[in-house]
Image (cartoon, rainbow, N blue to C red; front, side, top):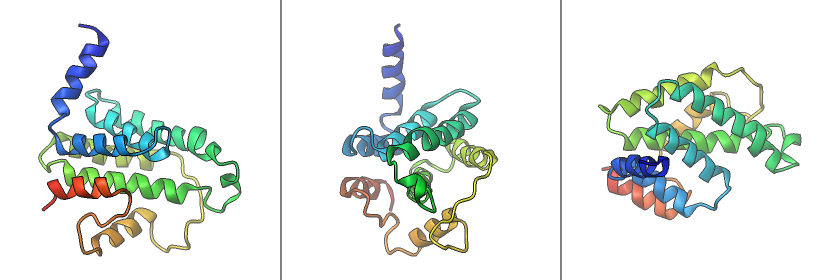
Length: 169
């Protein structure tokens, strides 16, 4: 069996999972090369991984992506107070919350997701000024999502919201 055939077999094993369908829809609807699409692919690769160091490797991959691809993608971003991290983290945290909703609580992928968050916290600290918010950005986003009238009241892409509503009561 070739590597490509193994990848297709692995992909078909996950194809019925709600989180996989959601990420596939997100990837299909976003423009190739956009940071949203790239983060969706990173999360998909992470959740499909069976290796032990998946969480530390993915945390490092996300950090490297921000510094080597995302930040240089807009030459003026490096002059902003937040260096574009607010938008980057906002999307990343929304993705983490979406996966929390779509992965069943008993699935080991929930533990993987938590491990990823812990590994992201282990990365070297950097200081940014973001929106003059008093509390951590992740809590701020979570609070505003919880205060919305629907479980996934976000305006990212209509197709994604529709897909999420299929899996969230």
